[in-house]
Amino acid sequence: MSAAGEKVRIDGVGKIFGRGAEEFLAVERIDLSIAANAFVSIVGTSGCGKSTLLNMVGGLAEPSFGEIRIDGRPVTGPGRDRGFVFQSYSLFEWMTVAGNIRFALEKSRLPAREKAELVAHFVQAVGLSGFENAYPRQLSGGMRQRVAIARALVYKPSLLLMDEPFGALDAQTRGMMQELLLKVWEEHKVTVLFVTHDVEEAIFLADRVVVLASRPGNVKRDLPVPLPRPRSYELVTSPEFSALKREILGDIREETLKVMALGDVG
Image 1 (cartoon, rainbow, N blue to C red):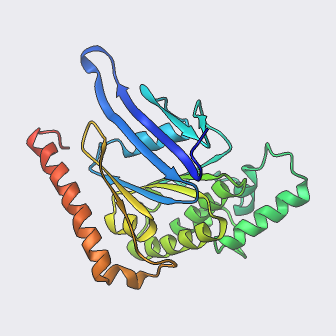
Image 2: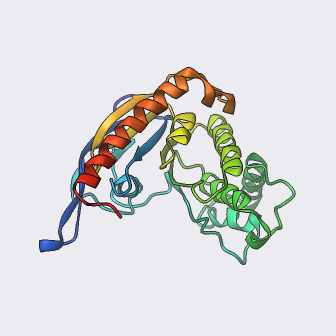
C-alpha cells in the first residue's frame, strides 16, 4: 500500500548498463517519494541518469535493483496510468492534429462521441483550436509539442513523464510552453516528473527540484520551491527565485567539476 497522498515511491533504485569489463553503474540507490499532483523537476549534469530514472518510472527500463511503486503497485512495465512527452515530438506525419490526439484513445472502449469530446477539449486546452485538421508539417515546433502534450493527457493518465520536452524550442516559444504547461497542469492536476537541463525552467515549473549527482546518479539535493502559484514570468527576476537558482547551479557546477576531474566529459 502507498502512504496517504503518495503517488510514486522509489526505493533504493539503481541501474547497471553493459556486461563484464564494459559494465557501469549509471544510477545508484535513489530514494524518492512524490506526492499525488506534485510537479517535480529533475536536473543534473549530462549523463547523471535523469532520463534513465524517468524511463524506469515509466516502465520503459527495468531497475537492476530496488523497486518503484505507483499508487502502491510495483512498476513492471509501461501502463495507461502514465503519459510520456519527449523532446522529439513523435507525431504521425500523415495524421491531422485531431487524428494524432485521437490515436491515444484507439484502445479505449469509450463511445465515439466521448472520444470526440475529449479530443476537442484537449485541442482547446493546449491552444490549438482552429488547427484540428492541420498536419504536423504545417505546424511550428511549439505547436507540435502542444499536440504531443494533448495526446499524452487525452486518456487521462495520473502521472505525466516529460523528458526535455521544450529543449528544441527557441527561448520565447519555450517560455510560452512553460506557462501553457502550468495552466494545463493546474486544470487537470496530474503528477508531473519533468527532466530538464535548464535550471530556470526547473524552478519556474516545479514544487520541488531534485538535483542528481554525477555518475553514478543519486540524489544530491531535494529542494522545495516555496514560490507562490499561479506563476508568471515576472517571478524569475525575484530575489527568492535568484537564490534558488544560485543554489542549484552551485550543486551542478560542483558535480560538473568532479566529472571534469575524472576526464569523463564529452
